[in-house]
Length: 319
Image (cartoon, rainbow, N blue to C red; front, side):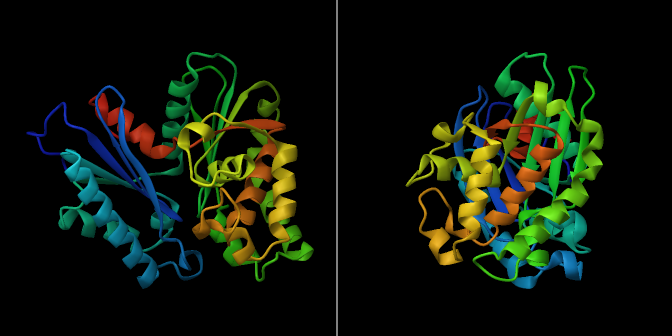
C-alpha cells in the first residue's frame, strides 16, 4: 500500500499531507519549524453509498480524485517535495479503496500512501492533541467524528494509547436513518438509538470524561464551534481550543433538526456541504460524550493530517 519516498528529497522542504476522508479531502502543507503554509478542505463525500454497496461510487471517486490532484498541485507550488496521502474508513470499507490510492501514486499525485487502521488513527490523534496541550498528566480523550466512522482515543498518563473505531459516521448514519429534512422526532430517535448501541464499545472508558481533558477534532466539532461563534468566514484561530458544553451541543441538535437543508446552509458558520449530515454528526458526538461522562470538550481542527505531518518533519515513519 506504500511506495518509498525519494531519497534525494530535501530535508528542509515543506511536507504535504492529503487526508482522503469519508466526507472531506484535506490538505496540510507545513514547514520545518511548524509554520503552516496551507490548510484547506474540499467536501467530496467519498463515502457516498459505500456502506451499502461495498464499492466506491464513481461520481464520489471522481470528485475525490479531482480534489487530490488539485491539492497536490498546490502543495508542489508551495515547495513540497513529498506529498503523502492517507485513507480512512471509506477506503477501508470499499473493496476498491486501495486501488484509488494506487491510482494516485501511479499518476505521481502522491509520493506515498497509507490506508490507516482505526488504531493508527487513534495514535495520531492523541499525538497531535498532546503536542497542543503540553505535558498535562490528567487523562486525555480525543473524539474524531468522521463521515464513515468515529475514532475515540484515550490515554491515562501511560505511554500506551488506547483506541476504538466505532461504525458511526455523519454520512453513514444520515444515509441509514435520515429520510427527510427537517429531521422528524422519530428519525432523531433512530439516530440516537444507533449511536447508543454502537457506543457501548466504550464502556471501559466510562468516567474518563469527568476528570480528563476531552478534545473533539475534525469537521463536525469545528462546525459546531463556528455555528456557536456565528462565523461568517471560517477562522481556524477562533475555533482552535474553543470550549463547548454538552448542553450547547444538545441545543444545536434541537435547532438544526428542525430546519431544512437549505435553511441550514444559510446559517453563519455552517459549510453548505455539511448541511445534510451535520445533525447525524452532532448526535454521534453527543452520544460519545454521554458514554464517557463528559460535560464539556475543547474543539480542534488539528486531526490526523497534523499527526502524520509532525512525524514526517521529525524524519519518522508516518504510521
